[in-house]
Length: 129
Image 1 (tube, rainbow, N blue to C red):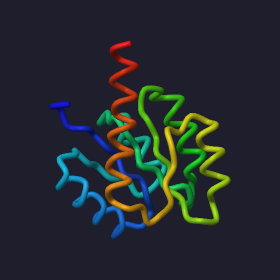
Image 2 (tube, one colour; image 1 turned 180 degrees about the vertical axis):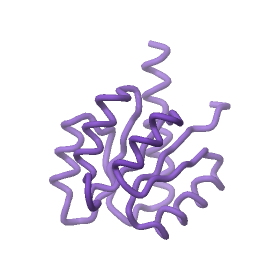
Image 3 (cartoon, helix red, strand yellow; image 1 turned 180 degrees about the horizontal axis):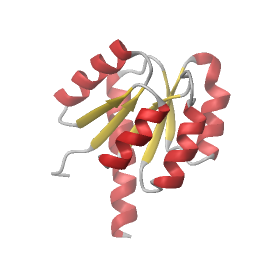
């Protein structure tokens, strides 16, 4: 995989997103950010990505609504839900609605990176299959 995986981080906690962005970019990923579901949809319309890391619990448009809209407008994009411990059932519901997988916050960096790689491999296989 020579081309960089393009990732969109969606979380209302700006400091968390900024830290995560830097850490993922160090691993060679191309990372953009959004602080709300609305921003995520605007960003996706202008800048296509491969994988979205999506926080479940956000003010305004929550992660589930954002997931539904992302999958409707961009069915090829894989979405990984990020959830606090109290929201695991919501994350599982997200997978039923098309999310690739979910991770507990704060996610271990290696776990997150490998999950992104797995989601990207799924896209490549779909494109070549």
